[in-house]
Amino acid sequence: MNSFLPRSIFCLLIFFNLAAYSQVRFTATLNPSVISADEYTTIRFVIENAATVENINPPSFKDFILINGPLQESGMTNINGVVTNYLAISFVIKTKSAGKFTIPSAQAKISGRNYKSNAVILTVIKNRNRYYKTPNPLALPNFADERMLNSFNDYIFKKGENVADKVNKNMHLRLEVDKKTCFVGEPIVASYKLYTRLKSESKLTQNPSFNGFSVVDLQPADVTASSVEKFNGRDYNVYTIRKAQLYPLQDGTISLESAELENKIQFIKESYARNNVNGFNAIFDDFANATVTPDAVIDQTVVLTSKPVSIVVKPLPENGKPAIFKGAVGKFEIESGLEKNTFPANSSGKLIVMISGSGNLQLITAPVVTWPGGIEAYEPKSSDILSMTSVPISGKKVFEYTFSVDSSGDYILPGLQFSYFDPSANVYRTISTKDLPFSVSPANPRPVIDSGSFSVNKENNQARKNTDPRKWFLFVIGFLVIAGLIIYIFKEKNKDISTNTLSEKEVTVTKEEMVQTSSYNQQNPLPLSEKCLHDPECIEFYSLLMSEIKNDLSSKFNVSPEEINKKTLAEKMDKLNISNETVLSLQQLLQEIEWQLYTPFERNEKMNSLYSRSNELLQLINTYHIRSQ
Image (cartoon, rainbow, N blue to C red; front, side):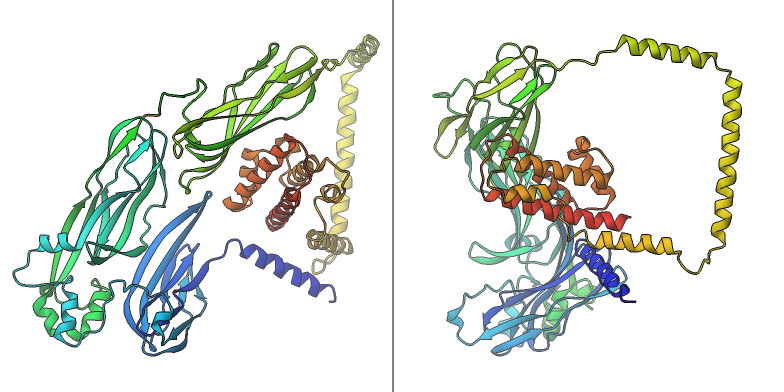
């Protein structure tokens, strides 16, 4: 009984630790959380990682004036390859008086289970000049007179008005760019935005293809979050339909295509509006569910088209262009190193080159290496870790060159040169690496077959040939019969043990497994690396760290350490349902450690950082491994 409680607590900790990485999240946020008495705030309820959302019940807003909502959003985000789906509803509210207000939790039924969000606190002060005044996001106040009724002009259709004119006045699809002139390879940011003062259902019917550009989208599809912006002196709800950074591939004047957006719009007739002033909030919160007679509504489908925008792409200057320039535009750095400084002639060497910085990294190709005589090189392989949401793209690109040398001796790989164009300074820059010396020892001797051993084996083979095969057959049959009898007797004996309790041996094994599992977090999977980390004389930290990580992963995934690579890790971790974020973190960690192996050793804070990250990731992967067993 005494040992049951610790085991139970441990199992609960493992369960909650696993749930933290896959559970549904239901959160509430308030923006801003401090306002003046005459200002507005938006409360937003967000559900993440839900398979199905059956309903969402917001809290009561009895202490507030409901200005607008519920406004629904849905979509997904993609960060470093980790995709998260979300659903959100938001409300615009204001208070009736100053003070501190607690807005209680919302409730939701998600995949058959009930969830509650967190509560939020809103502080309302009397001094409105003390805090920033948020704009009114096209709020719909309660009406009581003709003056307030006029605020609904955008939604109300009056006699003599033209539907097309009313739509053109209140809805615009615009293409906006951060600049209209750039160099080849220099990015521009293009955003297609819907400016609207009307309620509508919109669908993108013509999506620009951006011919002549390398395209990197900056937001997931179907994002419906909005902001409030001024256009021609009026406030509009603004939805970004598409946003991308474009890298021109050729010079000249290139036209960014138009987008087309189909919008289903509804207006309320003026005669009905005047007779139902007190019911406007319900009507405009949700046209589809509002109890409005068909005769009171005007439906209109309108296709909006953005105006094309011309981009002047300037050619890169010929003056001062280096002969080795291959189209890199941005700001970059270059490093290089050898996997081994010494190796035998019958094995291969590896040159690692890393280009980091910001610019058109996705288009950069492998630098040309000037190989000394007697060296045979193969086509380089490339890998990268890029932040595609930064403008320009930032990160690093790594090239691996495998080569072989026929003769032993001392060699020097001359430093590499890399040229790029810096558009901010309008100049070409050339950067380089240092020479890399290495030694090739004589080839390792091949195994020699001993003639004496060969003759003995030959005699043994002849003796086996002379043996009567029938004797071997009878011997094997007899052995199988005896083994079968032993197994049968053993099974019959085990049946006599009570099936209601574990045998003493089974209880022992269960305890040992539980102790082994529960003590994993107390054991350090990187003992040699930790020892070297604190030993000022030890210079093998990175090689020890890489070796211990691979050994730990190989034991979990049942593969040899030599088989630990990006593809193997992705496949094995996917089978354990480990998140893409963890897979990418591990791959990036191994690449950073590998890079340190090719650079001169230096004691610095990076050692502590890589050690801590390695330990945390191995502990996390072990949690999934325990769960799968």
